[in-house]
Length: 239
Figure 1: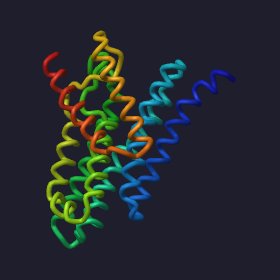
Figure 2: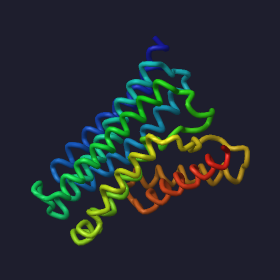
Figure 3: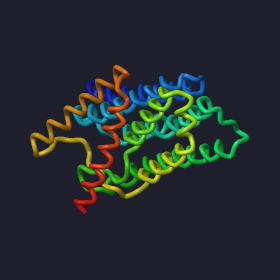
Figure 4: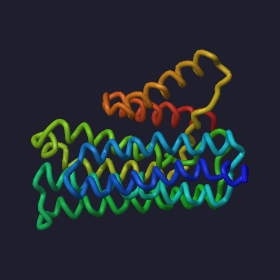
């Protein structure tokens, strides 16, 4: 009985992430664009929690890994792509007859496909990177980068959306390429250097505070981009 409960706890968190990912899709389609972006951010926070709970409770399993990947595909693969299309379609008035609209659709499809490949590769070849490292940009971080970028774009208003809309397909393709790349990016885990460790956990706590309260998306985006750049640099140096 206790074992069943122990395994159910992280799966329930994963299930909540999946439902919130679906909520992000529905919110984006109904026009609540900023809220959809925050729902993706909440999925990011939950994705870290379910893995931590599984390890803490010694409740890791093949089912849990597959279930987590399905939730991640919805929350970080499909929802950000849908949100990107809706932000441009509703904010910039880009209609289906325009070539720019279909370019964005193709880029969104490439992003979702890359997320699916990244998740499948992670499950089928978990040893593709050394212990403590990711091989390629994690879908969680990709979702955070896109969600916060789109939240800021939506907040900036119609003129900003119109100005930045031509560059959004490029952002989607770059993030997609990073996901399927062999870049080594370090996991967030305890470090040997206590000052680096403290800095890391202070930032993680700040990310959770901002995400839960739906404030400072600028900080969340800066954290995600800095993590990607510094982490990739560390991975290249290690090689």
